[in-house]
Length: 323
Image 1: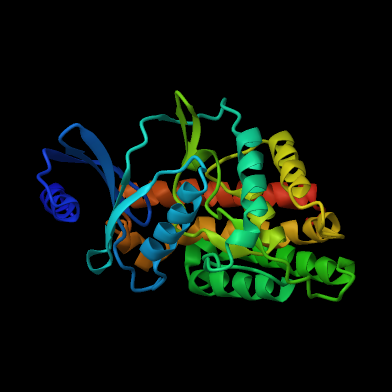
Image 2: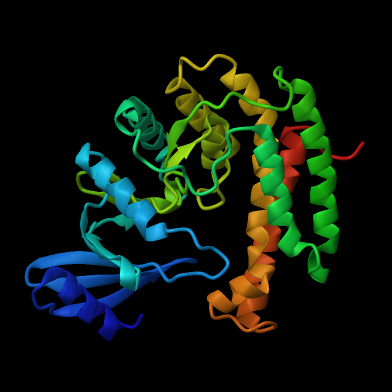
């Protein structure tokens, strides 16, 4: 979608003229345009369809933000949507992105706690993007993430390291989980793509963005994904604080802390694989990168280093290094 198309689409959704449209952001999966309509500024979010990922990201986020804004949580409010053209309008949030020096941990813990208090009113909400309610599901997701990367030559050595750590992590989880390799199917409301990278500081406080993967998930995955999300780049003390706050929001879940400790390495190793998606030809094409170009090589190098760094932390923090 270009600026002219964004302007026309926004005008059609609003039913009135639009003064201007400006491209202001492009994530890995979508594009954002600032829409000026009279004295009002709105955000038009485009959700291009993806052949390799048929999930309804627009529908997921629209439902999530309708629910969250309706309960007064600090998120953008839905305005209008055109599912046929894969786009929606939301209120504009005028704020600055958080920086590594900004905390955000307390606000994240508070939002997670508020979500859990609303679970009784959220029975009609969808499951999250890639929910995990049992350890077996985590193992299957690891295998599914590994398969598209397995034949990419530059990754061979690193993937061998990841596989070795995964074998040790899954074996240890099987031994530690008291109910065998199955965890209780408790459900929590998970923001999913949740962290410093999706928060804005505004004069009235922190606002949370990007809920296209929001929904019901297992508590172990919700907590582990938030702690480990590369977009937040939390320090070890920040991860521990966040874990404690999120566990405190679920006081009636016996054994959750022990199950979480057994499963954190499983989700961390999945993140090691997600970070390597820049090497996949389908993802490279979607981002408009040419194989072998300087930009593509820089992206691959950056993500490979992040994956290696996370693997190193997992091996040190959870004793997964080879003997």
